[in-house]
Length: 309
Ligand code: SF4
Ligand code: SF4
Ligand code: SF4
Picture 1 (spheres, protein in one colour):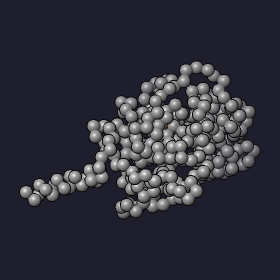
Picture 2 (picture 1 turned 30 degrees about the vertical axis):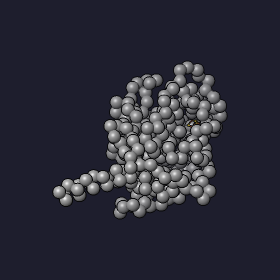
Picture 3 (picture 1 turned 45 degrees about the horizontal axis):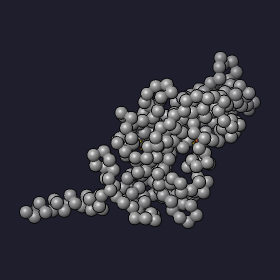
């Protein structure tokens, strides 16, 4: 494949043709912030926080969807770029709860990191804010859409990595939000609780129910292990605080297979303090059931009885 040579922040950089300016800059050691960009699912260009200055271009361009070209001269932190990024963060914070003190994503949140980096302490805009109820209907995933920055990473991951298409953008303008079909709760949707969407969410809009309130992100140590409940060998992370396992979390898309419900439930049983109560979805609602019913034993016993007759 042919190479192209460009100049980034005064440094000559050579990359294969077709490489994005974002990847070329990052490869050369320059930082560019991103919210919507997903290396496993690139080419979206929605959030615009990755804008850079390219000499001769009519406006700042999104580096994640711009191919590097011969002779290009790029500035990744020029004053106009920094100003644009500050404005984007300012606009995002205008409709965002100031909830970092109790947010489970605190310490591992890109919006928080970028607000700190670009010194945007609070929004200069005033206006209406969303007040969505938190969706904790799914036993594994908690959705707080008040914190969503509409980056679309969850939508693309569910559609292109998991091949599920459970969630998508709904409504228009200020009311745009990510939702399952007919704007139901996650429990009422076709979600299989793979949690890949949680892994890619850059903020605290999607978090794990089993870790809620148990530890700050920086107190958690992750250890990658392979599930032994079947021959598929799905990978996941055990999350430790000290020596104690708090729960299991999914791997990012591209690393092994996602953990299925059987593995997730089985592993939580192994590491839970309290005995886990089995739940089954009946009439679109999760209800507590007995273990024989959860494991399908009632059906098996009924079938055996019928066979005996
Ligand atoms: S999502 Fe990020 S910025 Fe928002 S409250 Fe949580 S930690 Fe703070
Ligand atoms: S948990 Fe998996 S199936 Fe459910 S919405 Fe997220 S990516 Fe889609
Ligand atoms: S829920 Fe998270 S990943 Fe999905 S659009 Fe909102 S911020 Fe992005």
